[in-house]
Image 1 (cartoon, rainbow, N blue to C red):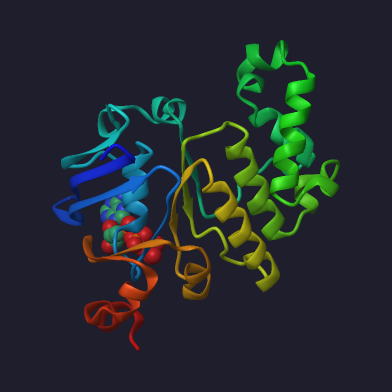
Image 2: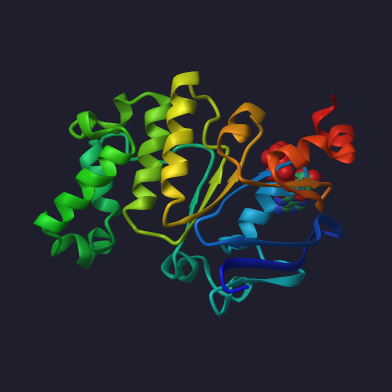
Length: 245
Ligand SMILES: Nc1ncnc2c1ncn2[C@@H]1O[C@H](COP(=O)(O)OP(=O)(O)OP(=O)(O)O)[C@@H](O)[C@H]1O
């Protein structure tokens, strides 16, 4: 328990009587890279929506540190250290990579933050460090709109990293990426997990094999099985409902 950063406890989410998530429990450790897979409509995105405060459950709780996130507002959850990346990149196309990272810097935010924001040495150092990590150091002056789809995804991950969250939630981060970009993303996510926890929703099994240490399989809103990628791949119910092999 001591090493747990997030625990989802008996979570149920209903939309007009339809249960999108049913009595789901799972826990995430510090520095864990946890992948969630499952067929369409399994409830994966709804789970992330609950964790980041977008949707409220009908039962259960989500403990992060000592806080029940289901009782907190979205902005409070961000401040507590939970960062969410959606499937479609949401970078500022007319701004450079540098500027995108700069406005994501915690003190660069908001009217007052922006007015008094200075590109000080620590800010520059942090941006350089993140740009290197996300493979975009050579593109610092490039407008985000000119980046490839994959590079935009990395930039968005960088914009989250600069806020130094404890837990990152990523929804299909390699969708639409080239094979080379997928490999680099696997390296990036593994690197991030030295110091932060990640929950990644993914459909691409080859990518899952590259990154996952622990996999949770969801089906029709419920937990079908959890374990290592090998354990999950051997599970007969998983083969039946998901892999179809
Ligand atoms: N706001 C909503 N109102 C009604 N039903 C919803 C709502 N959000 C999700 N659902 C339903 O809940 C179920 C779970 O959806 P969810 O998007 O969480 O699945 P998923 O596992 O992420 O699927 P996919 O892989 O296709 O993204 C689906 O049947 C979906 O239609």
